[in-house]
Length: 171
Image (tube, rainbow, N blue to C red; front, side, top):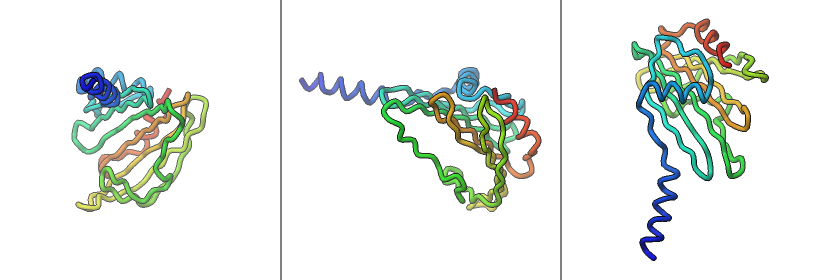
């Protein structure tokens, strides 16, 4: 009986644990599954993960600039048991994952598939080093999935037209 219960508990734990992706080709494939976007050549696949269980399906693909001056993160989440997705506040003043204090923000809308999606273009400052960054991000629903896009660049590496071209390339 103890072995049976341990097997059931172990099986449940195994099903909710994400699979880490380290192979750049697999990371790029996951990124294309999440959002079909043209990733500029100055970015390289860094890491990713996939998780698919009874409650949700989730995947993430992360890229970094080859010069280490920025990152791009793409993600998707599909809830299977209800729809209890909690999104960050639209005009949040901080980014706790990177210790960035979000400042001046403008919202530009772009066509993604058949819908118009708002993207936030923000100035940000690292709370530890006072280094300046630019953050371009969005979250939106598509075919029952929540998708997210987050581009974070050091201010001197930021080119708004390049960011816009990347967003406009989303298919």
